Length: 93
Image 1 (cartoon, rainbow, N blue to C red):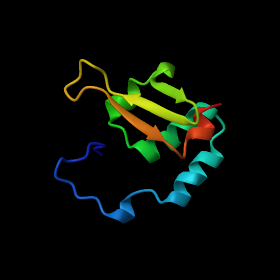
Image 2 (image 1 turned 45 degrees about the horizontal axis):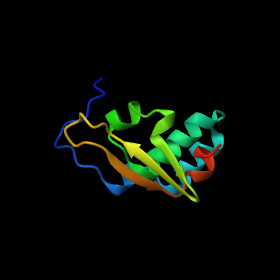
Image 3 (image 1 turned 90 degrees about the horizontal axis):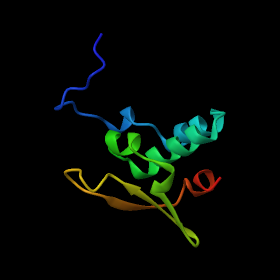
Image 4 (image 1 turned 90 degrees about the vertical axis):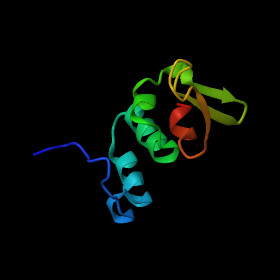
C-alpha cells in the first residue's frame, strides 16, 4: 500500500473535509495545541513545510487582529503573512 499521492491526482470536493467534519475534529480533540493546529490548517491551508516549521513566535497578536507568519526568509517563496479569523479563540489561549 502506498501513501504517496501522484502529482497528477485529481481531487473532488467530496474528497475534502466539510466544515462540520473539521468542527467535529476540533471538538473531539483533547489537546489545545492540536485543536489550534487543525483550525489553522483548515483556514490558512499552509504548505506542509510551513506548518512543520511554525513556532510560537510565528503568531502575532496585533490588537484585535491575529496574523500568522508562514515560511522563512531563506525559502524559495519567502515569508508570507496570513490573517486569522476562525482559529483566533484557540490560538489566543
